[in-house]
Length: 82
Image 1: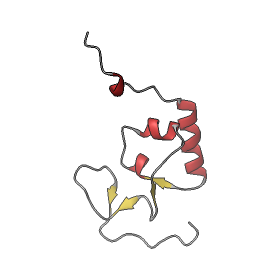
Image 2 (image 1 turned 180 degrees about the vertical axis):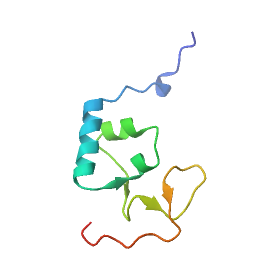
Image 3 (image 1 turned 60 degrees about the vertical axis):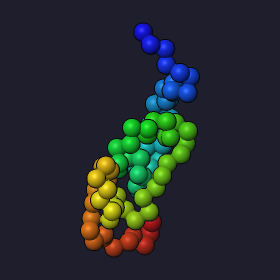
């Protein structure tokens, strides 16, 4: 078995904390790049209490080929209560 270098090792996130962050985001109706892009590092960020927000809804106007965020050429009107 190959021993991996220390910098390559990551502690497993505390999934209860991740769940709490997700619940808070749902309660506040906030969209994050982390969730919309299906980021593989979501557990690490949410466990640390951080997130990257999509400030104009759950879609993006860029359509990057490597990204999983929904694409909308013409975004919906902004939510004035957000």
